[in-house]
Amino acid sequence: MSDVELTPVRDAHKFDEQALEQYLQMHVEGFQGPMEIKQFEGGQSNPTFQLITASQRYVLRKQPPGELLPSAHQVDREYRVMDGLWNTEVPVPKMFCLCEDASVIGTKFYVMEMVEGRLFTETRLPDVSNDDRRAIYLDLARVMAKLHSVDPATVGLETFGRPGNYYERQIGRWSKQYLASQTDELPAMNKLMEWLPNNIPADAGSVIVHGDYRLGNVLIHPTEPKIVAVLDWELSTLGDGLADLGYLCQDYHGDAYDDEGLAGADFAALNLPTEEEFVAEYCSHAGRDGIDNWHFYLIYNMFRSAGIIQGVYKRGLDGNASSAKALEYADAARLRSERGWALVEASGVA
Image 1 (cartoon, rainbow, N blue to C red):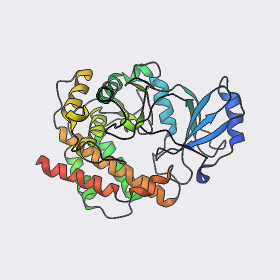
Image 2 (image 1 turned 90 degrees about the vertical axis):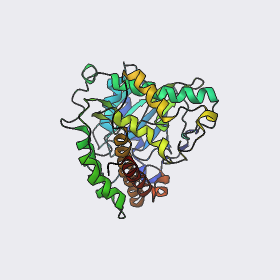
Image 3 (image 1 turned 120 degrees about the vertical axis):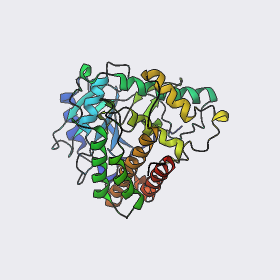
């Protein structure tokens, strides 16, 4: 388990706190100052803060300062999708306000409720019991399937994605994002950018995709092994739900961003579901018989993750990352892209 670390607001992310307080008094029902502001250390994209008042605690998410990559840091999309999912079986925080007027604190931001829960960042869950370890992973599969079962039109999100093939759009987007933040030549990344567009499966429909669905982006009930909130929706869109599944299952094939991942784990001793068991649990809740071309979804996500982490590292070099940890990812994009290309070669479709 990771205690959620709160720090004073980092110098690079300071803003006009008085202007924020005045705005919230006008736009959030029941808000009463004065307030204290602390910054969450975790997260590498949109800076996140806890707002502490005498009667309630809130969470503020904002865009980072500085020049932003195209289509990145869309806090307005985060707000919209969580607001839409509020009355569904997908657990999300309650949204209070979205401010798209950058003149208030310098960037767009939104404010939501503070959900009490446990944050786990180590994929093997060393600090929980064997029974709870398995239950938490099975609930990850269940909640993901619930998300993909939501009809976007019923929650006002039918226009949340662009028309056309989801993977074509995503591969194009992350290729551009990677090239815009490139710091070194990565041969495996170049190979993936060439291979992926030629191996896209048939279009699989359009559901709400989280885009960063993993253990570190959910809160677990304070005492029970179940998810109470899914967070960090910045990369959400409409697309193929198997992209989310492949993203989480990367951990079965190598280290995660910050720890050893699940590759090589003793699943029986830890009482963790294997990759096959996790995929089967998802399919049982999603009403699927199985998944064809499973290797594609893993390879695509290795490529995409490499593009994302390269952007995090570049923001660290530029001095406007959301966390001081950004500079620790100097070699992460190379490792992730090389692992992706190794899967291409192992699949026999290189």
